[in-house]
Image 1: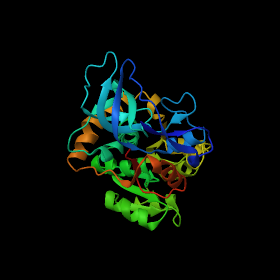
Image 2: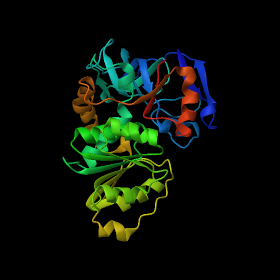
Image 3: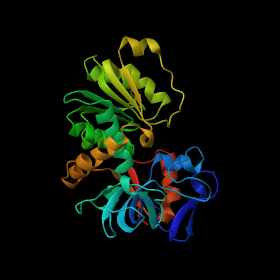
Image 4: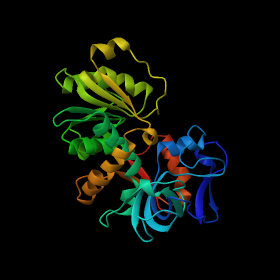
Length: 324
């Protein structure tokens, strides 16, 4: 089978397309014929050796952690999934013609949802669902800041927060992206390249701040979220693209009685609950057209390197999907 692999940690340009042997699934595992796979920032980090995700034990390593497709074979003990079933979820080696996942992490996929759309869901909507529902417990009518809002998780969070009844303020680095976020359901948009996020949030909310803030980039955005949070507000941090060493002014945190949550998706106590949310809320809402995942581009396996470079340059809106 064909697979996109790295042999060293020199970045996105290290990706090579190889022909490799098709292995058998182990106990509790499922082998799926990949219909589509989603690209994430963690895949970019993997090419630099700064992230060691599911199945990453040694080089060469097949990239990709989420996919949708058809069950091709099952390992010992797997009974609920059978060959031919459409599934979506976390896998190892997604950027290949075949990938492997635990049966416990693969969900049935409705025929109404294409593989390309489904492949954009797991990581983005698991993270957004965990942040909004299982951590922040967003309530109808609350102000929700999604900062930034133009990435895979951001665009998912904007739509999911709106579906939950939140009043969304979303940020992006240019007016084109801001306009797209408004089209996705944000009530207000902020161009952080020319506007001060905290000042704009205070203006929009009549100086009260937001009840929930999603920090998607770390060092820079966390500080903005803390400035923008209302009394008794909740901040959920899930990304570090602007740096990992964010300052935490204790006086502001205490003075606003704020709660801060951090998310490491796969190792979080709410992971299984979030998987249930993906199955019971997100996938049905996508099938019904209530959620419309944002796909920026679809590439083949030979386009993985270029897609990762686009991600590194922050030159995208939503998700890039790989179709083998």
